[in-house]
Length: 224
Image 1: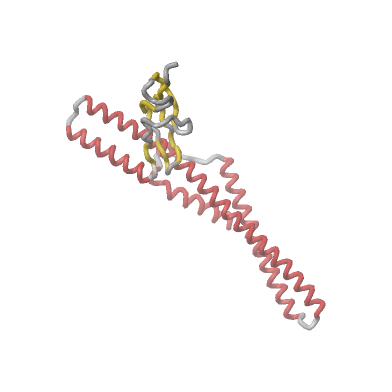
Image 2: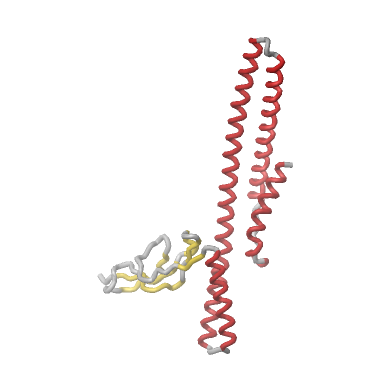
């Protein structure tokens, strides 16, 4: 019963959080291996819970025997030692259970972050398609109402990305950083320090200060 509760609560929390962003054409599933891992975690949880129940039951029984055998000092001492042993076992079990809960929370946060990054990457591609379509409308001098409507769609998309922690990189003029930039063109230029970013070919993005998508750039190279 506990196993089912853990499994169902985990997925209820997760899927309720991301249902608003789910694209029915790109549903995210988990593998059989991930499912088995979650089931194994639930089984471990159930085993720990049963162990806690057993320890608590044994502790209660020992206390009852202690009251009945107060006049027998030897037996009282033995029972006190047993009680201490089970109390220590209970403390260790409780500590193991707390560590297990923290581990489950960390794994859940890691999984949620991974899923969010995947979704945000897809949204960025759609956003960039909208920007390209907007440029075409501007070039073709389309109807102003169409342009204004399209601009509103783009602004709403930008607002959505920002609310989810997605922000574009502004890297023109910066020094090339291989951890967040990808050099696709090298151009000779003696007016700027070597490895200065001259142009952004494909914009990069951060997700909560973490690199979500590296920027593809043109960098300078001094003439030998």
